Image (cartoon, rainbow over all chains, first blue to last red; front, side, top):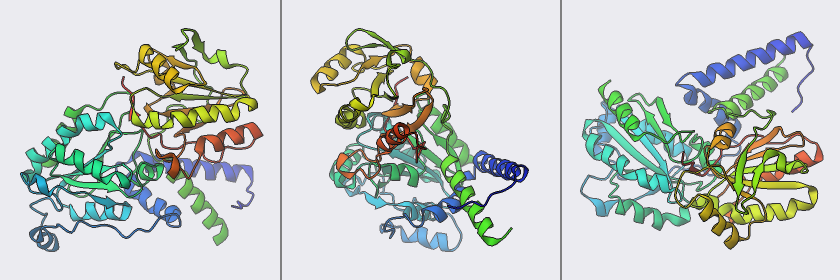
Length: 228
Length: 195
């Protein structure tokens, strides 16, 4: 990419401006939404076939409610608690993810990014299912997205059924790859959780970092968003 | 400004925002690598200075139990083999506080797999903290002056048959050639480190 030469003072002002914009963009909770536009421009050429696999088990009541501007009373896509044999999983990519958030407007959304190759994720999975069982009626949508290779769907399903995960379950179309990490903005490895408020804004991301993820902190954050 | 210049700067901004807008790594690219110290599976102590003869040093935080770390073992063995004559060395470090990931388990693993690089245990976990390691595997490439030239994932897919981007190899080749590393930071991918 050819960048025209600039005089040193002008160049340093431009660099300072860009740095400030970057810091501004990174510091606000809405940053991922803002960068989505930037990313979609630079990624548009690279994006693979993106017909999204929208859940076709949507509750028609929730569709109607969404059309009339009311938040869906039941979580779109989730299986009714107790109907464990109906547990399924679908492929998901970024457009599908954005559509998912859209469908869940009005509900607090917790996304659990996990994989069968992540033992800690499997250990923590019951906590995710508990949150779904406890708070689904209060407006929490719990989504699970596995970063397993789509070829491993049966292993993923086995685990989901074992866990009685009547949550809204997906496998990343991009599998166990960096594309998955970039597509869903997962940082620092797995486990990874993202918590969105009723307006669809990312409020918290829980990453491994240099401490273990505190599951109680996730519960508290969920409760706090449900109350607001 | 004419539209070409505006377009070029818009692209630059998009690149900067796209590549930098996630949790900043603890160690910046270009920073002097922190020291590390640990006991190897051969019972010898290894530190950063133990590898002073290497033109480039690959430091990978890994462990025994994580399926992703295990999926990369053969790739690391091959990498060390391929680059040995080019004076690139590799050291694997476990900081996991977990049964099975400590020295006894490590000794068995190294022997069973035939590791051709030191596999060291840092009980203090200081190296993991200093490097900002978050998961296994998490790799850091250090150049001739032991500045961080690349950090993140070894390549872009757990499945070796599906790898499209060989981040670490590309970075090593660039460092050896004295060229700029094309992709200096990628998202590390693996199981969280057990602190």
